[in-house]
Image (cartoon, rainbow, N blue to C red; front, side, top):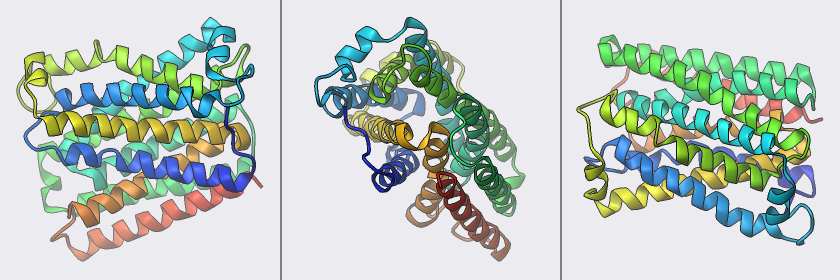
Length: 325
């Protein structure tokens, strides 16, 4: 299987993962009059298909014991289950995140949710695999947490922040972020304990767990939606072709970013790789501010808080990157 030969390549892979993780939601923003619960079926299929393709290509070079097929045969059942549980947790967190994006926009939902996920995920990953400087990691996580608070302050200065939907979206972000921070430790366990999975095998079972859990989480939200009226599966089959294609594309983008992130973590440690990948909110906020104009018409205070948020996220990335020495 392909693994980064040096830190420079690993860092490029981690930055690419952050761009993928921070950009996939644009595919949902680009869908018109198509409910996210229906969009999400295509997204879940897309993440699994992209993981499978990369496993049979990048993950199968060399045809040795680390190749995808050989690794799946040798891996422990507890490792496979751990990866799939991580996928189910990710899926619930991501559904809540997409609902929050529906209510609050990319520039708000992503930084708050994924900032919280960064704190939870890095701490748990470091406990499972204590690799890198704990001091620099802690400083980076602290900067990310400050960035989350600043983004919340920026949102609080928008005119619509006084509405009930605003409070609801913040609660969704917090719950989503807490859950989002839990999937990566399950993947780290699957890839570092016993008869471990490779990053490529790990992402295949992670995304399989996510896809299968749609028959629980997504069906529930279709019947009891967070936003709007209940929808049926008939709406999915009658959905626009553009909605299906954008859903698949969003899944492919996220899946590729995840493979890159976990593969880079083989060299740097999963805590460091996860932390840099979770700088995705800065990418998402850039999309939200400049592409979707989500802060158009905001006052100077909101813009100052937003600018400081970018500064602290950038500091978080630099500190976490330095944690690898």
